[in-house]
Amino acid sequence: MRFLSSKRKRQLQRCRRQIRLRRLISSVAKIKGWPCQQDGSSQNDKGIRSGLDLPEDIFWYIHALMPLRDAARAACVSHAFLQSWRCYPYLIFSKEVLGLEENAFREAEITRDLISKVDHILQRHSGIGVKKLKLDFLSATNVDSSSIDSWLHRAVTPGIEELTLKLPLDSNAEYSFPCSLLSNRNANSIRDLQLSFCAIRSTVDLGCLRTLTTLYLYSVRITGSELECLLSNSLSLEWLTMVGCKEIVWLKIPCLLKRLHSLRVNECKMLKVIESYAPNLSTICFSGHVVQMLGSLQVKTLKMSCFHQCNILRYAGTKLLCIVPNVEELRISSRAEVYSETLNNYRLAIYI
Image (tube, rainbow, N blue to C red):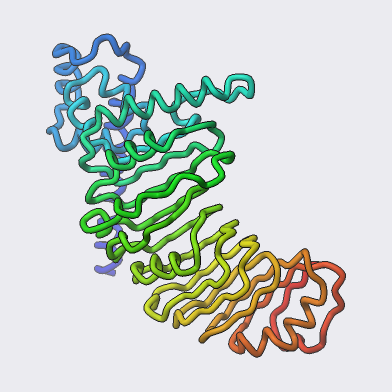
């Protein structure tokens, strides 16, 4: 009972802290409607400080909890927030976040506005303290490589944990991601890396991505050997997702990836072989043409979607179960199939 009462006490204290923090954030958020022309006003700054009576580090903490647009507005009216804005940790850029309305007849103009706003914000950021950088330009047009390079070099600094780069759909993955960015100190903190519609070359420039747990590649131009080099530098990797990576022919996963437990591969049209020696890989989700599976597979859950081929059940019963003998859950999505008694002993979901 004493243990339970102390546990309840800690929960109550935590709830009280959360309530106080919400009230503080609510009080600060009221300033977002103030006009930006009052920038740096000492009177406004004193009003904010006297109203909340908080030390500077608490102001910085509250500022970091605000969405990007609110944080920018707060920086316009308070010197305290202006200082913390230069180290604002969560830089998330998209048309929605920056308030640019969708309009098919103004795509070029919207893209120019988007680039201008990102330039304006990052030029005023010190680059220090960035935890998350997200550049979402999927629906934009014609973003030049020099701008992307400039933004990445400005914001990808030691301490960054999440990096997402989504380039325009019509870019044909021509932009080559600068692997040298993730070398030495920058590589030590990155946990989540998501890249779309770009190329990854010169992977030898990569540092040891010792904290990387999630890797997501969408329509990325990368060869099997380049990917193997990237994976060999990512010893803490847990989730690997590849979608539409058309240059991959042979996906080889080294035994060094002892924490990898989930692999998702969708519509990588040139892929012929998946070879894995990751000892704890337990889940594979695959869609596309049937590929050869090699290595030491300890998979428990296997999900396959092969809508472009027939006789997948026969393949599963005669070959696949020999390759993944420990599978417990097998999900197959296909067309024009006949149920096979060979699969009776497995938990099987069939979508025909």
